[in-house]
Length: 322
Image (tube, rainbow, N blue to C red; front, top):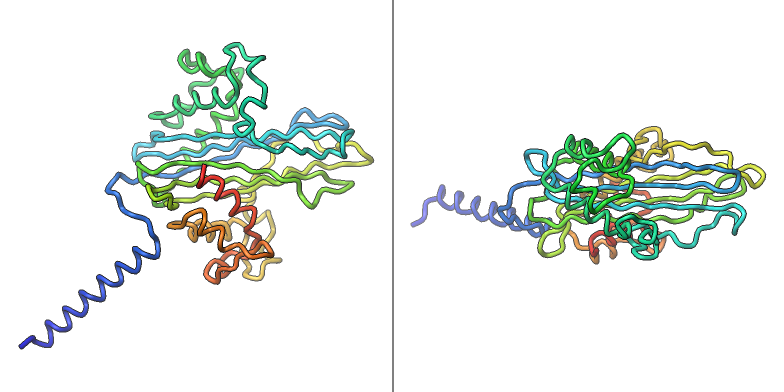
């Protein structure tokens, strides 16, 4: 005869096992036994070279996977560069691919002293960054913004001032979000012309995503951000000045979404809800939560994220299948 206490104990064990299984199934992220790793990112953006009808928008994004000692396990970098000209199609830019996406179309090779395209040189920087900490990254840059390290200079002759800052800041910002050292790190940057572009403003919206993926292509950590490059226009001429511009996360309360939000949450708070929701999911599973109106169709996500997610999901998926 089984005693009542043993029946209770057996029942509790079953409940714990079922609960553990349910949690495991809900996250779908497997514990490989690999050491935990921190995921970080940073964005450095600026508007420069402003004339009456032209300017340049640059946005460097760096993503890193960092070990317990603050050393880089992996590093990914990309850069959006947009050059609108008001004298041509009212500043519309049709090719919004990043430098990495353009590959040979960026056409740096012929002007490079080492005859290497941007994507080839950035791959050298990414490889160089592995095993280094934030101080070592910033220490490899000379006063003129170019590499001071002989090994790095041999394969990377582009200006790395903003690139090294983005990587170093990404290391400093890295957090324990569920990734492990064997996960795959990926990054995506996407740009689109804003609907807010009009006679007094030419605006380009940028989305950034850094994700880590397990061996089954499920997201183990996710970081998203966005920025708005606002270029003031008056009578067909730019009135904006050379300046840096922040991301929505950097703006925090200054982005001023809370009052207009049905859940009274700022953009960075809603982004955090999306990041948490994305863990354990594949790119395809995320794509299924976007409704026809561009907002989330998932009740759990809608409880903490009521912003439009179509561009966010598209960019995260872009990173997840890279």
